[in-house]
Image 1 (cartoon, rainbow, N blue to C red):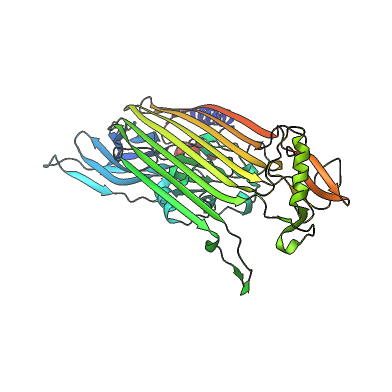
Image 2: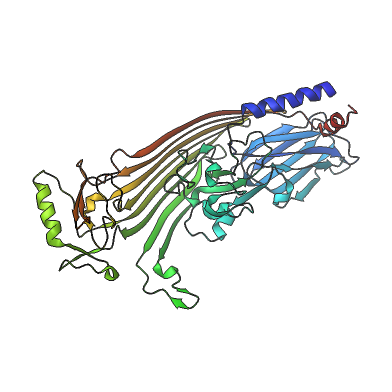
Length: 515
């Protein structure tokens, strides 16, 4: 036994090394031991777990020690679990909820049949995080919690803060937020270039109404979770079931939702602001108990002017009223000069802009048979945020005032936008090979782009100075031409699980030298 345990430990160390570059958690499990009334193991007992909303079934048989393990199961529930053995009454457990990345502990004691062979023991198992097998310091947030708890930006960050280890700037355990590892359905959603700790897609890559469960783990001892020293943030999306279900929603926030006094001091007139979010969800069966779909679409619009400075009528600036020293005649003369070169610098009165975010998600779940479950999910996000031209940076001239300030003004096309794009695809096959072996094959692809956009046609950036400072600017924003970060992340992971039984006593003996 001592030699066999050494082999087990070597295998565990090997797989920990091979998989250390990955942190994809998308499923849950149930494990336990089946005994009789005398606490004797019942090898060969049958375990059948049914995800009641979808009819998805997972089955196995207890090993020689009466132990069983079901892997690769949908998180959530409720589940109904039936445990049976010849000559014993069937035990039925209901209202079981599984948590992402954790194994629900279910130990059953069966009673021998006497007279009434149809007798059924029904035990209600209430959902509880304390009834699951933890894999380290972790916090699980369900879709019910996300619905009930307040959210400012409708982003994952609003809920990852529920972890007691969270800190400012999306940090966990005192670590910089860029040391986190973020996955959605196993697909990488990190800011891989490392310029900031915010999530891709403008910090909000997926709709909250598409998220089924969220997990924050700090120090897991699950070999499948690695590649971070901050936190592992894992989310899974919703899936369809046997009931057609849809929703349409809308949220609105303006300046009246924000306070305007601090300790009794009035901050004055609040600038106008408005954010409107509209979206829908729809899910249901394509083939009952077999094939399901779920789709989500969402649009968030926050219109706001790119800048609020106004042109002067007499060439005199007034900073308190946001009036620049530049006049309309100055801008018109500049525009006329640029027209000789065939260039249109854009408006000098209309600076409408804002932030526009569009999201779309589609998911298919297929119960191929009792032993194979397949999932494919695609997510798209496009976020566009308009930004004024760079204030003072340049190698050719030195200026103290910004290009849009009390001393200067820029044309509309001299501004730029940050265009954040996310394409994410996940395909997952969970297979039960036999009572002791299961496999998860997970393939993901994520394309994340952070590029600068412009309404300007290709043209040099031009600064006109007056009295040694900025005065007027036009052309393609000087730091935006071909300025962008594009990264593709492709991952293929195969997690093979082999249940060896309970060797905790053997491990104890190995440590103290008795085995």
